[in-house]
Length: 512
Image (cartoon, rainbow, N blue to C red; front, side, top):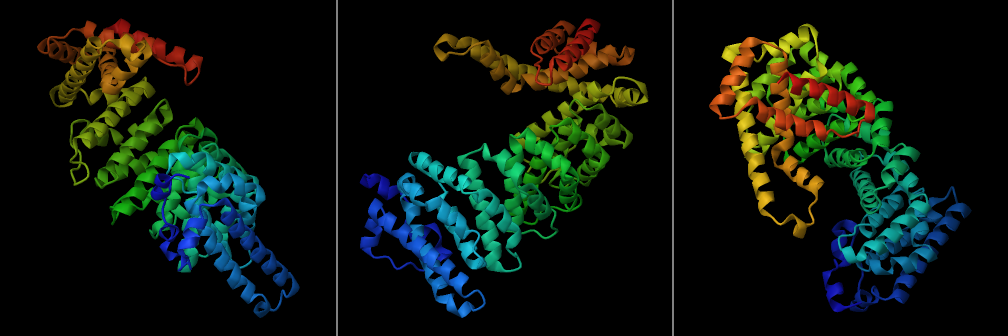
């Protein structure tokens, strides 16, 4: 190993200052980088583990007879922390028992030793240097083969968080799980399918009192749900939608007290948005009065205002029952207040990016309402909002249209000025760049304008025509945007849904 690589690594005692003082000499620090020394460390640990288990079996009712071997095993476990500074040796240590021995220590009857195993594993699986990735992945794979996932999840319920040391053990156990998921993202489905991890995490985030472990549980839950439709469905099946609603309901009329608590609340809303991807969970959300809760949070104008708006956007996208419930519980007034720019101002949302993201969420939400409510009194109430106060909301819509249109034109001109062949940019990439620059939001605004025109209301049509003329635009400009939208509707929700969406869009285009 070269000197530069050694220099980059953490000193073992820095890996976990709370692990106790290690009796290290200068020779030890050099030896840790040597495979022979590492094997000696591991064999010494395994010998202490074997001696302790034999003593426990021989004198099961006399703790005094195996206490010394337990102390020695704990010390040897701490010495293994040296290996965290030499992950390149893991592939050579795994075949001689590194993963299997540490996994067995997780099952130790002495909870302190099980906690020490979790702390050690948190260090060993924490890889920040890309050059160490393959070696640490080898350890992660061996731990999975040694049933470590089951053992780690079992210990979450075994540790009592009323004891500070065991609360720290829970934190370390979550750290190991996070590290394994980072090393092997495909483990997200495996750990949730084969253990009770989701149930434990749900119960933990529902606890009323905030602490570091509740925050960490929310973070792990968000990771598990993020890119896993299977886990999103699993959570719904164990009453997870209702549990998450209970967790965020604690903040309907109060703000988090610290930045950590604020981060936890964001994690919980991230979980809600992920879990609302499957259709059946949208149904559960509506049944559990999630729409009502989000409106209450918005009305309270607390820190969770934008998160509640984002959650409603997810719930109402391509799901008419949520749109209908939203209108029935008087959500239009709250949504259109935000649409008109009347949003609560605090230290967090003064940033322009926050305001813009919220603006785009509200536009998406209103577009979902038009797509989900196609007839009846609810449709009339929605359209009626655009007639109020001399069509002020159409004025706002056109203001947004021109702003996003200018932004997309600017990006289009920028792309036209580039040599796309040199950039290896095809038409799809070019289209995606325009979407990122605001085209998607512009398309939604054009859709809303199209729905307004399609209604046939003469007052609203006259207002739209007047504003288009004032901005030197025509209906053809709006149609062009909708035609591009129509041609690029994907089939992510299946070919039938794609065809339905295209038919609806074509009707609006034809009406223009």
